[in-house]
Image (cartoon, rainbow, N blue to C red; front, side, top):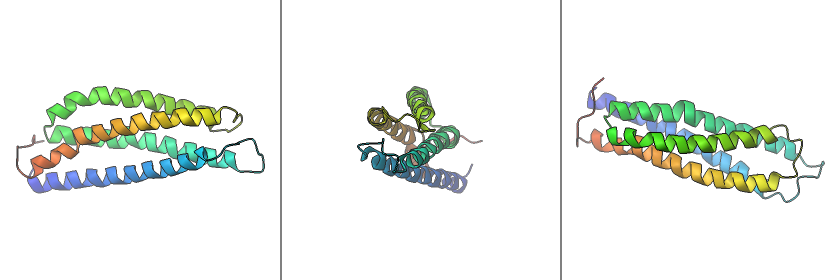
Length: 161
């Protein structure tokens, strides 16, 4: 691939990552709104609706990460010949997968919003899961995407496809 094609591909992946990070921000806003609630037992409030929306945003975010972002940045790393990033990424993806399972467990428990007694405790645990996941996602993006910019400015030749 010529440098212009590589630049276009890199820019396209960057835009996808930016959209995904914006989804992360939206997820965090919804999360913070839920954590401000101290009593979910009041039937007059629409906590069940808010919780359902939060769960939908959360699952969408996780799905886009696994089925779009991680796939595209891995493909990009292959194109750019980023062997170091590709060697390190499986361990990070495994750690992220562990958080995915915890997130999906939370979703399965609360998507129907029937029993909210443990929600405050579960939200706190979910927050810790988010902290770890987002840190690992950021490292993965740095390893498989951000480091490729140096190849665009001519430090080394990427793999040709």
